[in-house]
Length: 330
Image 1 (cartoon, rainbow, N blue to C red):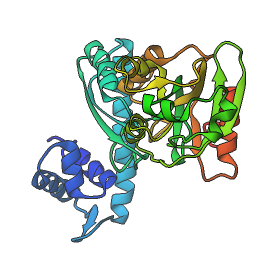
Image 2: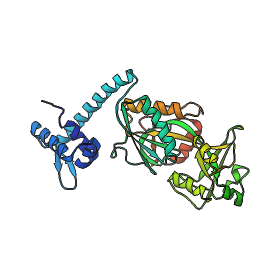
Image 3: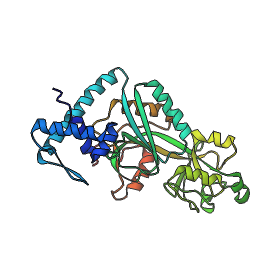
Image 4: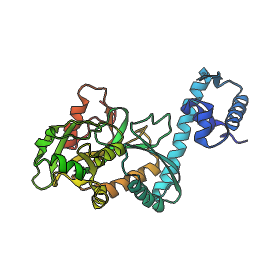
């Protein structure tokens, strides 16, 4: 008798919140999920899930059984991961969310190298403007650049990314360009996550903070870049992706030598268990993207924007390169 039969489906249903979502996540039919859980309940001689047309609810026995099964599955995954890490390999599906990603072509090339290195890993990537519910959507990790909004999940700072200011030639011909970052407040700027821009000079180690404004604001970075190409204002692009745009003369550099430096966060739904495949990806991203601005700490920190004054604390943390909170979020 296969004593595992139905357990994985049972846990998947509770985590997904519905039979249909669990079936989608497991890539099997809803009827198969339902049958295996029914068989499990018949074998145990008790009802684990109370079903209705609109919701599911764990029974008292189901709550205790779920907690135990969840721990068993996690420990089983850890055992497999220890073997995989010892061989520097991993397998299975890895689901990522890229928040505000602006250059899909670059990201495809980036992850293509990772998949070539680890051919037993299957990667699914979704693009979104805001951080989704990672647990509900079964996302292993979200990549977010810059300040993080209201976030209940722990995160790891993977790297620092420099952003270079740019504008269309038509905009420059009409409005000119600032000679110093402090003059940006007199120009129309494209705003994404924040209107407070802190610019860093690459040679003089000088920092200037300025509050900008403009006609266009959007969390969709691709839309912001297109707005800048259309002549609506000055925007920023990652330094690793501006060469192509400049070569095509879609945009021209503004304030060369000055950059906006942002942290790249890897945000995961859990801090106590990190799958081997996710650890390998984190290490790969740090090696591939890191632009050598000081040491990147691998300590997990809680990014809970609900705490008073978190945004200013995050800005100060970016300068200090220190964790905001410890692993317990204290």
